[in-house]
Length: 61
Image 1 (tube, rainbow, N blue to C red):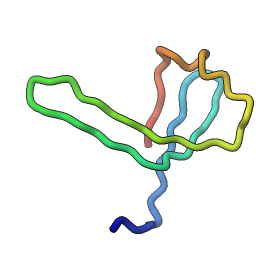
Image 2 (tube, helix red, strand yellow):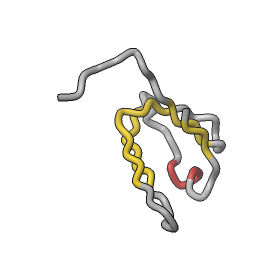
Image 3 (tube, one colour):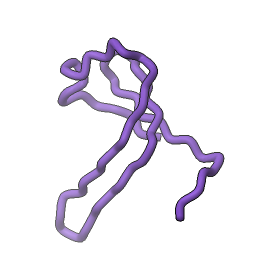
């Protein structure tokens, strides 16, 4: 069973300077295949314009 740790991951899109806490992430990769990254995110900001974030770069740390 997973347990909490002191690690904290964030996801910061370049649009609008919004920052999300990463609740969970999964990365699937294989040789000669594209990779797939799934993120479960959380934010206290109810006014996020998700349309403005589409096709934008982001920082996942």
